[in-house]
Length: 587
Image 1: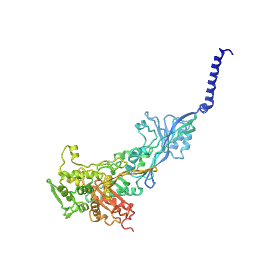
Image 2: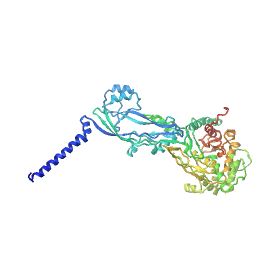
Image 3: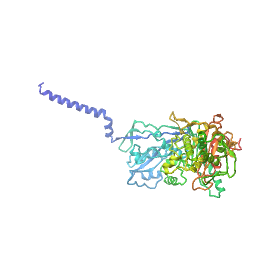
Image 4: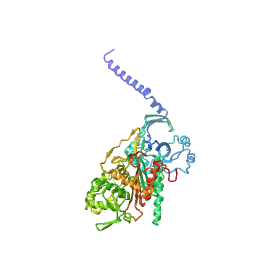
């Protein structure tokens, strides 16, 4: 072969090799793709929705779960089988599609028996589309402000990585645990023929479900707490009758029950509330949601974590502060007189009679305002406010409790706070108000139950928490120790409240021995009978007796009157449920 022919043959062989490689690629490697195109089919990738993590109570009873729902979307224009489709859906005509929308929901939550027929009628119609989605529902709903609710993503959230059809927590635990409950979408390859029918699907990446969450809540106790708040309306309105005032339509308040040794929240109720299933309905009931948002009773608010004037429940804090700084001793005695005059102002006790000499135990038990006034005056009221404030913070007030929910910090006032806030000095008379839980001090029901737990356990202060475990992983919380030498004095004072003091007429014969404190907090601009009603109680007494499982409960009612007549019965009902105490008159 001539030398000059060889390069030409090399070039010919090279191009033949390229042609053979290309034929192999087309006929073997990409055969499926071109066979699909030859049949008029096409492929696309779609994401696969990921189930949201479920929420259970501590015993495994579902509170929030998921189910598959099917919706029919319409993007405008004429459709085939129009009359038949409209008849199935119960519609008279097709809706208009707004200019700023690509499509509208023609029908949501289609019944299972409709889906096969509609799938057949809509096949191949580009302006009709059936779409499966994962719907959240609450088979055993609890107070909406506590569990929260979910909605579809906003435009901003779509830009941040959410997709249409995703569910986003909007309030309560659904929002607080969003990162835990949210799953990760999967991906699939879908082959569709010219008629729009799905020929084949291939999962490229399976969806990853959100993590299941087990709460510390006991559903039975939770429902008892919600009932107790609702039934408190009758006690509240009995007080209105005595004042010849109109009845309230709803009770506004909160109840929190915890294990004082661990910080586990066993019940958290708030009233009024709403059913979270309201927000899962499609289409959304706009008028009902708007009414909820505009309701002056604020049913969207979780009052368990809002801050209010604590009233006489705060006297446990003042007692502890005075004792620990040795401004009083367990035997220090002041006379519980009807009133004292300080700074030209008459300050009264709740009782118009002279109740005799009292120590700090009796002052707690009988909630004697004038005992605390005298003790603070003797200690030096200008300096005493900083002593009280420091102890309040040690007992957990003025800070978050550890709850997974968003919560208010409340307010523990002192001289520095007033100087910074108002540019004014602290006046001695203000200390007298704070000492009995009035004035500028604000606390949440959750903070009060944590403070009570600290006293009941002689200084052990665990973080409050609502999540018991995520999947199989138990929640870890921290417990700090609050120093104190006079825990027993406080405990005995709270016990005397029940056996002989302001709670005795309702609690002294309760089968499980308990301790507690009533509270009636005056509110600015409200007349007598419209005070905030509080009661905090724990048992068994003493806690280490082991006579019953440990429990601490706080109930709060806005503008409801005396704590012993409105809040105390609610706490008693929850305690009776927890300890299986039958109603009075039953064996």
